[in-house]
Length: 418
Ligand code: ASP
Ligand code: MG
Image 1: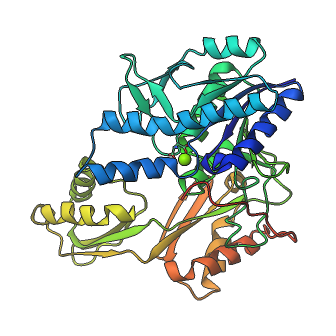
Image 2 (image 1 turned 135 degrees about the vertical axis):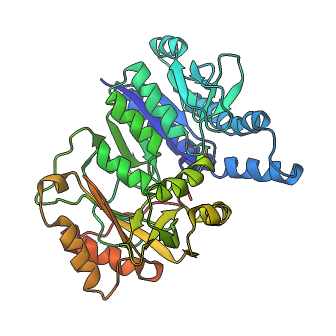
């Protein structure tokens, strides 16, 4: 017998048929002898639809408090329907909102962090033989205000609840049957990983592998909650995410990720004197613009060029910020590009193996593609390249690191997240 927190995303409970399938799945898991807590997201595109509705009624930004009041209803529909479905097929179940389950958050609307969990009611209901269903993505402040955790936040609810309840396992049921070595839509022979470490998963999640929310992975690592990512549509074995994953034979790279949300800004002719770069990046930070890769060129005639990447949505704002300090910094020219993509290889085995990055550069140059920018960490190498060559590069890297399998990857139903 195990104590399991099971999380189902929006597409897994997207309609009545799917809801019923989830109810059966949960009941089956309980009848195997497990203690089961279930966290669900809002059905299908409910959250997006509610946001659209608010936009139709309000010019500009709606009040954050009322947005949370609105968006938290999506998950409440799911928990009530799931609980009654389970009871309808002979199970015993009870649903709780985030606040009923004791999920406390900081007093920030729209992206609150969980500060405390007091799950007494959940324990009690479990002791009485219930399957306990908890609304994802929501909590309450100490003052009794409803908050939400940010888009995709149900994963975090599930992991945090698993940690607080000291569950053995947190199962994330989704529309793909695990974590793949790369996007199976790009590489047909992508392999499903049996295991992956928290650190690797965190890199992949931050790089846009949308299967798990990065904050949920951080939580899981912090509290050492083992995660299993698996399909809600099949019984295939999923991928386990834990501290130390066993490296599959000879595989120094576990996954290849890409991020299309990359804009590059270049500042040309920055006079070479101390403090110039600090001025630039402080000004950007003040405007909450996150900078990713930074490349500083050599000095020529007392001036240097600097390029960096930001999210596409931040390009315009970044340019405005830089324009406003042009005089002060004294640079010559500003340029931006948005036809780029970042491709990354991720693998815990990289630290102890040489030549891993070299193989990446070789594979890319063999295609006659030039690399615009590079950045590395202990377990990652990223290259910024032209967007039009993305698929070729991902495929070539997948082959170069021995990740291709003979089997065709399973790709599930409609996508959980955009
Ligand atoms: N329903 C929320 C969203 O769509 C939370 C979640 O799905 O995890 O962002
Ligand atoms: Mg959702």
